[in-house]
Amino acid sequence: MEDNKKNIEVIDLRVIFKKILANKKLYFKVLPIVFVLSCAYILCIPRTYTSSLSLAPEMNNSSSLGGTIGSLASSFGFDLGNMETSDAINPMLYPDLMEDNGFIVGLFDIKVVSADGEIKCNYYDYLTKHQDEPFWSKGIGSIKNLFAEKETPIKGASKSSPYMLSKRQDGIVEGIRKDITISIDKKTAVITITAQAQDPLICKTLADSVKERLQVFITNYRTSKSRIDEEYYKNLATEAKHEYEKARQLYGSYADANTDLQLASLRSKQEDLENDMQLKYNAYSTMMTQYQAAKAKVQERTPAFTIVKGAAVPVKASGPKRMIFVIGMCILAFIGCTIYILKNNIKRFFIQENI
Image 1: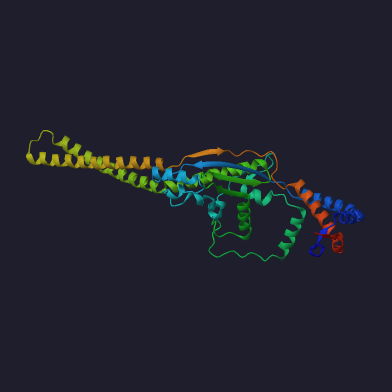
Image 2 (image 1 turned 180 degrees about the horizontal axis):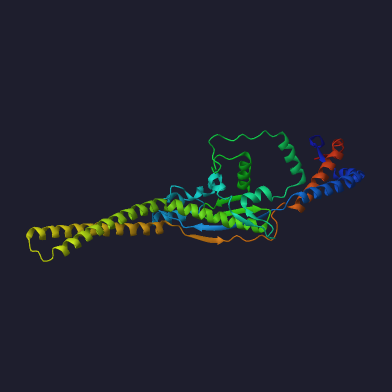
């Protein structure tokens, strides 16, 4: 039986603890230094605030049966209801609007005011002139500017074109994509807009403004075809009204001038004018009916939005997590010191046991 016993190696924790205690001075030197440096670093990072809101747009499903099936599928995590919508742009694609330069550049003119009232400007100026940065970022930026090549303007580029931006503007756009996000729940189709800024009131303003811009975009898209039809029938109705009024004036003038005459030819012409006036009136009446129907279609296609959760001014900063960062750095320093102490004596920490 003794020949069948196997020797295995296990870690002797007592030896490790003794080794750590023997080198405790190293910990007393390293950990305070890491703590001070971590605090100094994280205190230089500007604080940011986050505000978010949720809204549910009205869904326009193709049929009640499809809506029932979509509701059933959503309970299992599948989104069929949104696939059945008659819109060419699926609601799942709304978050991709933040990838469009045109939509983001449209946010440049948002008016923002800081919580203390000292900053009053548009969003673009806020990002370019009123951002706090660590001192080393400013130094690195100054060095980069010394060696940066002079930017050459693109020929034919318009200053107002969101798709021909300067290098600086492109950097601002990328920063906005990080600070403002749009997400949608695939089960409920609830849209969540999250905005981040260095001021609590400004981040709430951004969330509300993006919500308004998104609502305008969705409304304009869903009603664009109906509004074109409305304008078309409005023009036809205006033209038909003008033709009817001309025919009515002509008939009235002719009837007044020939009231006492009994000639058959004159009566025949008067009847022709009356018939023409009636036809013009019928055409005008038909166009007005079409115009009113087109107006009703615009209203029908205009989506309604329900605010599920409004944006609030944040009380606490969302980042950086200073305490977690400092504790994490101290833990990493402790682990690093421990590895440094034990790296040359690993074999001594194993003992053999028979099983």
